[in-house]
Image (tube, rainbow, N blue to C red):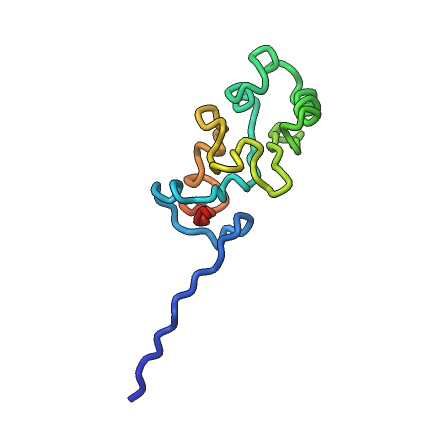
Length: 136
């Protein structure tokens, strides 16, 4: 009788752009993570921009297209979806969010972070999973 061959469990590397590679989320992961979620595109709306201090209450009545032009010029957004009136925050050349501290790998605007970030990973490309990678 042959013995059952036990396969070695291998882990694939996590890729932020590929949700199939993500791991099941639990709260303790964030403490040792390299902030993989902060490499994803972050969509924000006007309410987020106000909370983040990028625009004020007087700007709320300004056409979103004009806000987008100003915020793009200021280097805060990289894309504006005219149809949905949603802005995408700028990322650095290495894909990090501009608000992610490069050394500590923590959000520099955590208390004012956008709804997209507040809801991750409950809502997102793969709910309940995150792009966890062990911090070096």
